[in-house]
Amino acid sequence: MKRRDFFEKSIIAGGLAMPAAAFSSKGTESPAGSLPEGEEVFIEKPLAGRPHEGKVLAVIQPHCDDIAYYAAGTVAKLMHEGYTGYLIRTTNDDAAGAGDSIGERVLNNEVSNEAFAKVMGFKKVYDLGYRNHRMDEYNIQEIKGRLIFLFRLLKVDTVVSFDPWDHYEENPDHYVTARAVEAARWMAGMNTDYPEQLEVVEPHPVIERYYYARGPQIVNRIVDIGNFIDKKVEANMAVVSQGGGGRTGSLLRRRLAAEGKRLPILGNDDRTADFNYIKNFMLDQFSESIRGIPSDRKTGEKYGLEWAEKFRYFGSNDQGMTDYIRKNAISI
Image 1 (cartoon, helix red, strand yellow):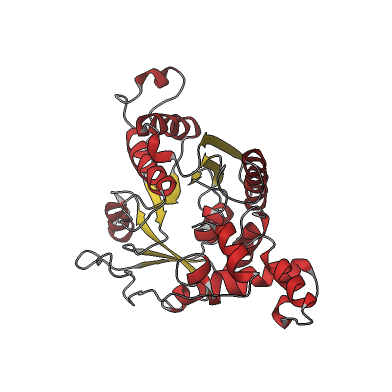
Image 2: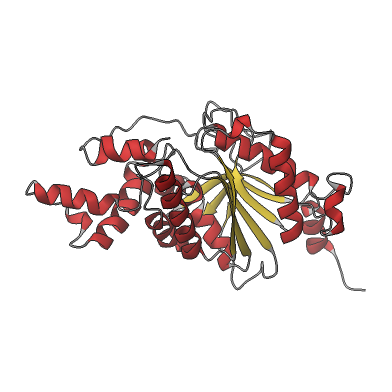
């Protein structure tokens, strides 16, 4: 999605198209398919305290606005519960966002990426620097190798990224990044892949994955982000180089004022306008046309939540045994 095009041609121009999208009540968007027989959607709710203290989260996005758009609520929740987070951006965003020259776009998007990271509280940012919308021309083995090294170096436990099995994704940066992440997180635990790295890092498998998609996907986990929706709004406010969020609300407020009009929901100052635009329009009422996915509020309502994000999730294969032991073990 070219968010700058949307910014210039729709909101500020006064248009808001809202294409319909299908989403079944069982948690699977059609027409992508259905959940395996007997599998249910798991509702992940906030946990008390910091149960994930000591664990490491790697958040991988091709562009500076991807996680803010689709998964910032869940990332904020996991980090609040104790994860140490690292942000990895695979492109340099040189063909998207504000700026008249390539250099300006790269710089502006880098500033937004760093601002987003600061709002979220990431410990460090890694930029891989591949050309925007051209990741399919790179050797994926190189991308995997770099990710494997980072997963091993940081001892990553959990990743958040695009769904590598999303069949409806047209952006090559999204699907190449997704496939590289999935392969790298699996290979990172093997001593036969990139053995030269093992002189400085140890094998480290990444087990837990939260994968999101712009289009229809199989969904088996809904994350309650009601306590973190404002953090998600702030994360999108930080990405000022893209057109979907950032300063769109304040620009719309000024345009309307020049026409002698106002929307009460946008308030009386720029910050309020930006905050309320993102929360009420981008993440809710006009989410379909701005982000290409159902409203976070509507997603939540289907499961009795105020706000929610949806994922294809994978966890530890021994969770069933862990649960069985917890429920059935007795003292001796």
